[in-house]
Image 1 (cartoon, one colour):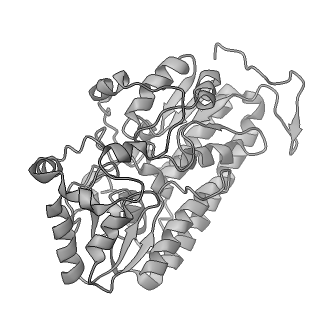
Image 2 (cartoon, one colour; image 1 turned 45 degrees about the horizontal axis):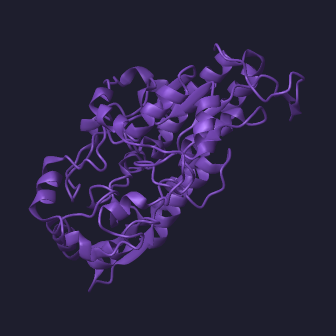
Length: 385
């Protein structure tokens, strides 16, 4: 690294017996990535979160403090431009001298293609990179780090996102959900606007070109796979150890402990889901297929293709039909987004409703965040089902 760290004492500061002098300044994009990096850095340092907790990462304007975190960073860990194409420009400009790691491109990462249909039944995860992995209820004892060579990674076509670089991103924070208001609904998700898209949105959905959400080649919600988390923890530890050899042993020990914690997490989630395995549920938008694949717990479908715009009337009607015909017992909303749509598709039924939060908006940031996030999804599913 070419830059000296600013704001750190030359004298070693001890925390838990580990020296904090010259610890790399690290910036991360979203809370789940913050959790994994914080776990590896535990007792040594802590990363800075760039996209504030609870905000949608798909479109966002950086606050001055968040831009400063990028500018001061020596290392950046982020999901990649498939999730946040707008952030690529900020990283390239503000963190030009930093070592940048896109987690979707880390060796061994499982990536899945987008699903465009309202109903997923018949979709085969094995077509999307899982053919070397059996999904059983026991909990995937074989971790992704043992199978790195079994996954080939495409280039994610970042040139396709150049148009996003021209979007203005000022340094002033705005309402987390402003982008949704521009799409014709407020934070309460009034469902009457779902019928204003007409045939144009029908065409977009069936063609798989929902530009409010599909930014790249792969579904970017890959942090909801504990197997990916294990892979990324190893990569994060390796990068930190290379940048900070004095604390390399601490990073690697933390990573080893985190992998053991992932074993316990997977076992806990499978135990939570076991009593409701096989029941049918629908999610608000298709953000959970990595969780579904890891735990062999498939959703029947999604109300919306994207969390950035309302679904077409045809899609709503299709979901309503399947709720009535296929024994769907649970429909899951998300915090902030369109509760009115969930009420619409469940109207006149006895279907239960619940909330899934793929970003853990209400969880405390820190090293314990990731297991809490995955457990919270399992708990919400089990309670609703």
